[in-house]
Length: 144
Length: 144
Length: 144
Image (cartoon, rainbow over all chains, first blue to last red; front, side):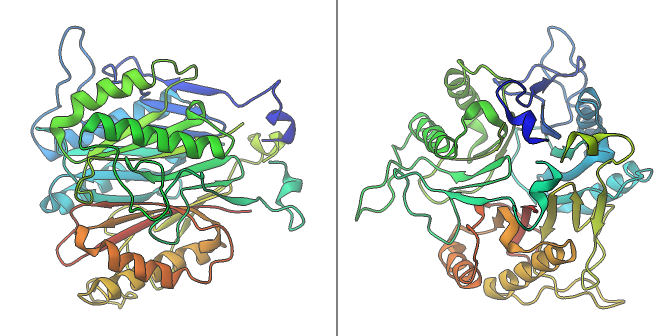
């Protein structure tokens, strides 16, 4: 931003991004935040769109179901924030089992086949997640 | 920054942030770094303020003690760098046990109850940490 | 950037960074991406420079061999993107065994002994990695 935009009169806006389809975060964090030209998407899992009065429910037990739903959840936040996968510079992938890597990459390649811009960088590591969840993804986008 | 600030005459400053209360990093990294309008806080754990001649000591064995000390350690770095939790866009939380999630969220919500800006995005995953440590947190802030 | 550079006429470029020495990513992601003044390096492991027709091969079985090769792989991406370790504000280190921490820090300190700018922030956590790999590192640089 220009030096002028750094004055107290026009500070950068910090905006929470909360798609209507998303379940309420389980704590005081935002599903996405935009400040300046950065948009950070919080760790998303494969929960289906929120239904009032129901606990968050994974899209299914399989890696494919959960991965595609997780991608959709990240995408919804990017789009609610005026962005898209095209702007993402880093995708962090948390899997629970190294045996899922090959299948995950297949799903990843299918999903991003139509990407026009340079693909995002990516880190994939294997961690623990709450019971029933096989994947979590967060993303950092640079807009503009 | 303006295009003028990109010339060789006025490059962005890269500044290490080292609160006096912090234990010396165990290797050649900085507890925090500011460059341009980004402030990155390194992974903090629940160590008490440094005491000369003593090894780093966790605030206590419980999740609550360690979490509150970890928050304090992140906050000290943010403030030493001219920032605060209000500027944070991403908080990465590393826990060691999925059974801690509910209690961690309670502590998180209490701690951030007074936040004025949009809450940061957050990713929580479960990893291994050195013996005795239950939590590690890092944070990225956008200033201005 | 100035507000003028935010117009549709001059959007920020998003550029994939692919050093010739690197093995092809196992999926549709980039080893590095630059957009605006941010350069994100994808998670790198200790694979030797690519050889046509050969599967990716770690530099060796030891932590030291894999760490030095991983540093070299990150460095190659930073340099291909017009940057260097001097610009890095965050280094994320994924080890597989807490018993490696002390030796890793020794190697880290040797490697970064000549750094002129403030050292990067760092987070180190212990995760699962594909069989045979002891370390993975990614990095975020702010150029300018």
